Image 1 (cartoon, rainbow, N blue to C red):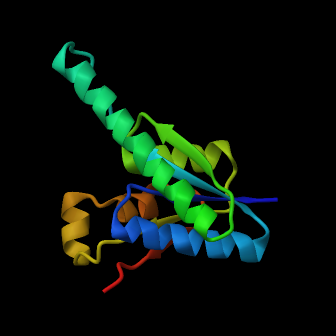
Image 2 (image 1 turned 180 degrees about the horizontal axis):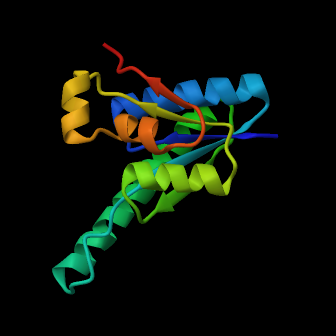
Length: 139
């Protein structure tokens, strides 16, 4: 049984990506893993630690939303909260689990904007060593 890794941040486009990931996993007999990646702000102290804890708490809430979406679709899902930037977190989980593919959503930004600002889908297309399915934003 294979695995499909879905980047999930709670946005509308990530919910669309999860829906597609769940459909694809069901068709292939695979498991689905939702990944929330966040970059720890640094090794300073005080406010930075509180900020990181707040991001982790938000990440767990977001992943719970993914779990509820999967359950509503009649599927099970594994959840991973990873202390790395989104694209790096997704690639790391995909490599660790030898995933069949990665699925992410796109906000529908112009390609040039994504290249300049470094969108997660754009980064994944350049660093992933496996297929990346980019699900367009629902309009």
